Length: 356
Image (cartoon, rainbow, N blue to C red; front, side, top):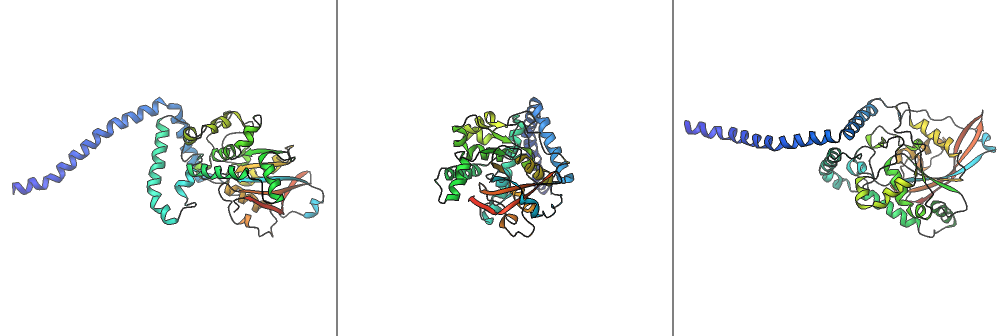
């Protein structure tokens, strides 16, 4: 009986010693982690605020709740202004890489989901403990694959253009057209980096030219990757990926980004409808005839839904633009009752690169 008792006690003893060893190993790690968090107290506070903001937006935001604009009367557009708008969707972000299949087969995405999530969480913890104002999830930056997508866009921009229409659009994108243009971006890092990488030749040839950062283009969503982490009055910081492998991006972000319109993250009182209307108003305050806009899939699709005629069945209202895609169109403005009213000229929508 004594032997049986000893045998039965073995699992309990093993469990005790295993837990004891684990606790001995975890204790210094815990102490070190707390020490690092206190040492990097400002970034710890910032990370805490990001968590609070995320919870607030997830439960209380009305970002997607806005009214569809009433159908415009085309009679009002007998006298109107026009701007050429070219939407450029950002490359795949770290958030996309973790939670969306993207161009991967669903089976491959499912197989890699848990390992990918562990990598993402581990990176987030590392960035927090080392005091970096950076994140995998918040204001998610371009992933390695996303940067590769934008490199492909940059190569495309160097091509001569197959048609007259494409040649004109490429000239606008490259800043070599007689049609004046400006580079604009959402205040989210992946969009800004997309413009910085995709249009680096244009920016290098024109060192005084800047990417205008405008809050109206901030993505329409409650997810944490759509919340800006760049403080008011500060330049955009390159992500850890860009600092390690694409150092030229940091220079553009520091020297060639116009932050005067940056007001921080979107407010709880904001919504997609308000920001799209603000973009339209802003577009027609610019002296340039064309605006090249780095931005986001939901925002772009929502814009087409909001400003194309109700009867339009265009693909742009149903599908998202692909990562790195470029789509051009003419935005029309008329004045009614002292206020600007806007509509997209559907006949002018054209895919420059990638499409939907």
